[in-house]
Length: 217
Image (cartoon, rainbow, N blue to C red; front, side, top):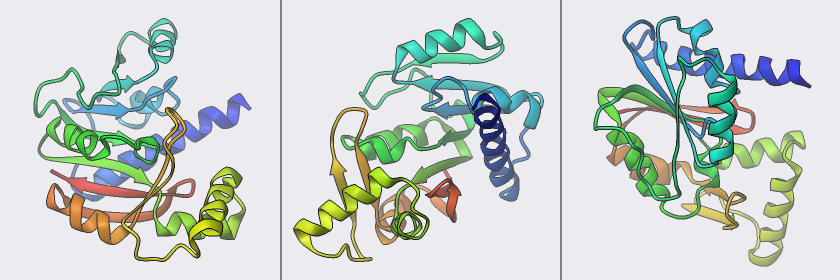
C-alpha cells in the first residue's frame, strides 16, 4: 500500500526527530543527519517536512537503491553506497545525528565495528538512534504474533537448546547475507555500548517490535 508505506516513513522520521529533541537536539537549519541503511528513502524523504533546513544524507549497501534514490528523490538529498566493510566515506564528526532503523539486527559480522564507525561520524555530543532486537522484541513477537519468521526462528532455536533465557548476550539465528537475525541482551548493550556512548534511553517497540537505543557520543 503506497499510502501506508509513505505514512510509516513520516511516522519514523518524526519519531527520530522527537527522540533527538528530548535530549536537547532541536534539528533544523545547519544540522546534518545520516540514515545508515536508507533503502529507497522511506524515512529519509521526510526530513524536509519534519525538520526543515536539515541536511539529510543516506547510505545503503544495495547500490540499486541508491541509484533509484538519485533518479527519483530531490537533489538536496545526498546519497552514497557502501560495502559490508565497516567504513563510510565521511570525515570524523560529520553529523549531528546518525540513525539506523532495522539495520543493526541484520549485521552478523563486524557489528561492533559498524557501531563504532557510526560513533566516529558523530560530532562530540552528537546523538545516535539505533534499533535492535532484544528481550522486549522477543516478548512482543510472542504477544502480538507479528514477525512470524522471527518467531519461527526462535522456536527452532529453543527446540535445540531449550528456553531462551533473559540474560543472554547475543543470539544469532542465522548469518545469511542480507537475512541475518541478531538479538542483543540489554545487559550486554549497557555494558558494551555503554562503554562507547552515554545510553540516554531504551525505548521498547519504538520501531515495530524493535527497541530503540538513544545514545550520545
